[in-house]
Length: 133
Ligand code: T46
Image 1 (cartoon, rainbow, N blue to C red):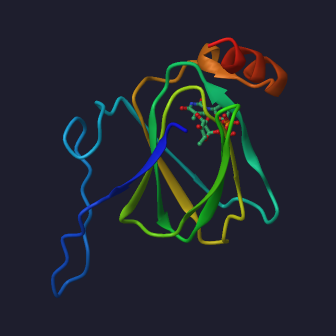
Image 2 (cartoon, rainbow, N blue to C red; image 1 turned 90 degrees about the vertical axis):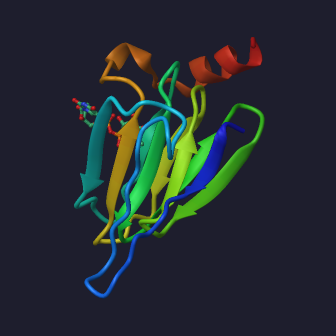
């Protein structure tokens, strides 16, 4: 399964906390895009796709949410509940995000610019791709 956690260093002092992520240093790719998901309504499930080439690191900078990950052979349920916890999700992993808390801000660092053609949104098509590898 192409996922793993990165422990992001917290630089805390009497004023509070600061976490930094540097591309190609703290994480294994150059950061080309940042987006964040917030104000997610209760019981909403998002995602429902895999990426052909994109690699990403997801960080809950506030609140928490869960990821359902699936590589076509194995699945995993993963909790993101700390701004110092980065979830790496590699290519060809089906993802669904759920159980967003009302204060959840899910920030995602991406290895590529946005490209709608990189998405596989049909689960059957995803299964066929990963079974043929
Ligand atoms: C992912 C999970 C974790 C853009 O125009 N540019 C962007 O960079 C992104 C990410 C999205 N969009 C547009 C496309 C849709 O019209 O924003 C709208 C919502 O995107 P989407 O339905 O793909 O959102 P999620 O939450 O299903 O998935 C997102 C990312 O798209 C995806 O890469 O891995 O978060």
